[in-house]
Amino acid sequence: MEGKKIILITGGAGFIGSNLAEHFLARGYVVRILDNFSTGHRHNIDPFLSNKNFQLIEGDIREPETCKIAATGVSYILHQAALGSVPRSIKDPITTNDVNVSGFLNMLIAARDAGVARFVYAASSSTYGDSESLPKIEEKIGRPLSPYAITKYVNELYADIFSRTYGLQTIGLRYFNVFGRRQDPNGAYAAVIPLFVRKFIKLESPTINGTGDYSRDFTYVDNVIQMNEIAMLTNNPAATNTVYNTAVGDRTTLNDLVKWLKLYLSEYNPEIKNVPVVYGPGREGDIPHSHASVEKAKTLLGYQPTHTIQEGLKEATKWYWQHLAY
Image 1 (cartoon, rainbow, N blue to C red):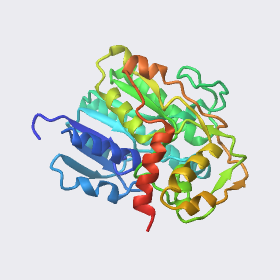
Image 2 (image 1 turned 180 degrees about the vertical axis):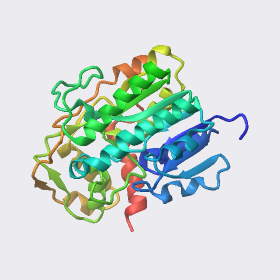
Image 3 (image 1 turned 90 degrees about the vertical axis):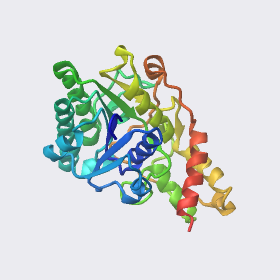
Image 4 (image 1 turned 30 degrees about the horizontal axis):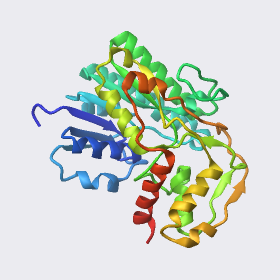
């Protein structure tokens, strides 16, 4: 491994983290992941265990010494570890804060002390809060609507301080409803796309919170991988120590999402097209509409999304059918 650059991916056994690990292993990097497997899964990293360039540290970002060990000798950190989900944060704000704020600070300190070249971290579109302007532009945010949103905004504030005070290069990526292969369809806090896909495959009715008119900038995971890579490697000084929307730059209502999911899944089982949808009450803390401007990322990083939502859904539903339809 001598001479090879090491990438540390926190939360590397999770949905996005494991996709990043797969991508960078394929490009010859040494990939070290740090994960406590509270929300990540060992089966996500099983294919990497035989790769000589793969390293696993089982540990928690809430432990400063663990973070220090994980960051030793690392060139880049892609910080994905967090407790996601707005409802979970409303139910348990203390644990969400411990992981997302204290754990984040631990990783920043470890990165600073280890002389890491760049710290790229998963920020969140939830930071836009009650701002009603569309599309969402990085420099204009509102008030957070959940404990989770507060923690992700605090991440941005801490990253900015570490950039200005300690010279640590940081880039935050405000993820907009990422979906794709390996996203967990199970559990109380499953994201809407894998949850709905699992329901449709089982010929069960999914429940839409509200009228279905809420819209999201659903973003396929390959677009997110691209953003992490170009943020990690950019040589443009003006592109660092800031935040970027990580999205497609389009929005889709939940009703349209259901329509496309049924269309693509019915290619594997025609009965799916006849499964009805149930409408329930709205969800506390939800942002009504989410639509990102990606002009900043295009201008400063050279970002070009490779997948629209329809293209991403075609790939994702194929993956889920292969892995869930049994």
